[in-house]
Image (cartoon, rainbow, N blue to C red; front, side, top):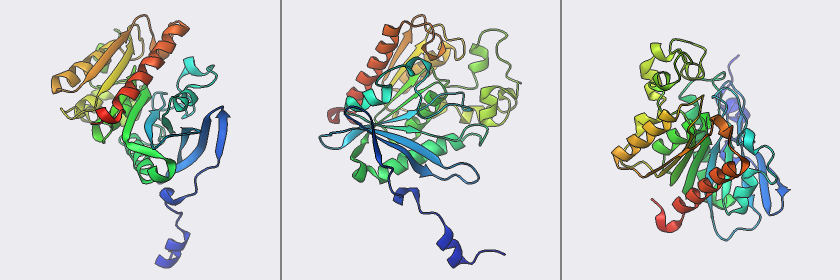
Length: 300
């Protein structure tokens, strides 16, 4: 029996924008963590949550980093910045909070749950949730920087190019799915393979769905209004070729956008092969960029 309109309205879950916030935890000195705030309920799949890392004491509304995890769009967790950071104490998100940022690290639907553009819809919904609750959370969402690694870098770039943000940091991300097969090492990528990470993301092999691949590629959305980008990519990346970062940086420059492209010598995917001090430098460079583009005097 169908529900009456009144009963349907009574049983409907409250909007995520009106749900109580999680209680604060204190995972490191000087840091508050609101773990597992629900920001969206996509139909037919799990609720989507974010973790919000905050400094204990803030002088005015905080600049915001929206962080998107990697994992090939089919795995990964919002708690993780990648293998090289799992042993950091305090962890990278706590360090960012201590540096004066709010950090929202997001869930999004994986490719086993939904195909593109679901992932972009999710991270866009998270940005809307953060905007709606900025006052109670003490955020200045007019100073938002997107940051992601690998598949998360792809989504961070898509978000930065389709929303209003102050800047974007990408680490070794795919940026043009249509050129990725030809840029990969010979014999390592089959564009007709329906089981590649990219095919699972768009719901078809790249060779059979070039329009879908193009629509899922950040390079497609570059305009002169693109925010500043910092692109870090390992010269020895065996998973996502350095050429992806080079191509993306060139397209941004040609459009008139600001881009700082930094190949990282000797680095494979996930910063594999780098000494610890070089990983620290990648992180520090990214923090410096986030600080520079989120300064009020440099706001776009």
